[in-house]
Image 1 (cartoon, helix red, strand yellow):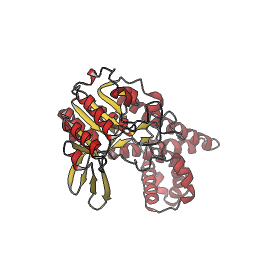
Image 2 (cartoon, one colour):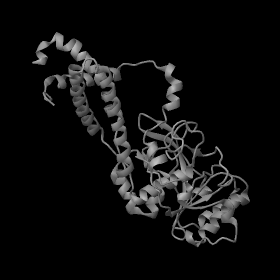
Image 3 (cartoon, rainbow, N blue to C red):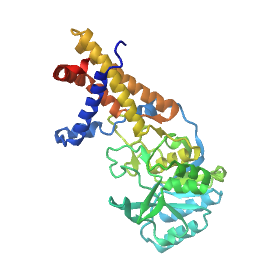
Image 4 (cartoon, rainbow, N blue to C red):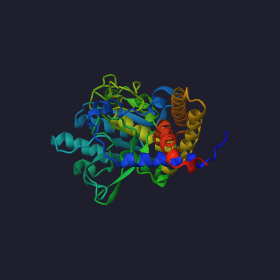
Length: 391
């Protein structure tokens, strides 16, 4: 560790961030890399935690999932009446009834809604305005249904790119025409547990990472026919949150409708089939809020501080390797970069797995990978042009 505190390493560190800053400002056309970007762009190393390392999670008994399948409005009305007869605390329906249909079926559904103690219907934010950071339109069910319910928007980040995007986060609140509106899950929690909702609000996070519990089998769940059958005892629904939404024609037959990739997908790289329906994602969001089991993310300033420290240490080690092991420098330096990069990734995975803490590795990995080049620039050019730097 001789000479660890020397100005040359400060200069190398400053040079590193100068180079990174210049690269960030220079527009580079990498369109030829688009196919590769699409193939790996949706990969997040932290998906490994959810798909491979997470311990088996307990079933969340606060939430009951009900499959709407492809039921008609009259059958949905029957479902709601049956469910409501067992006194759930909140019923949330992940479906928008935008148009009038047959008068008889609409009347039955409207009447069923009118009997609900706490009903939440989804809405959809549309036409985002970047200048004001809000939405122009809030699409909701028609008045004969909506007058008996409160609303929460169902939009999920990247849910318009379901062909390859993974849902890892959600927005607790958003704005439409200057008015703040809750997400579907946030609205349900505000009714079910106001204290948990207030805790969410106090975090003041524009985006929250979803700490997934699991797929539909981590909640109470009912297929469409099980609700409509008179043979099943649904008394366990009392005082629960009941979420009704599409989960396939039956739970055993997946379809591509309203289904998304999540970090729980066993094939976390090169995914083949989406793994979770939208209503189940909302159940995971609600479960996380109720349990206050959030993922904490390293702030940007701390990520920068750590990157500076890592850059300084890497500059010192690689400079010493270059100085003392000239014949083996290339091999040793590449081994060092590989080992430290893997160590950073390992620490990131362990912190998320055990402490729900996500660190930002991007800048740290960049300085590690480029540290050898920066040392070469310093040793080959700067130290010779400005020899006083070595004093």
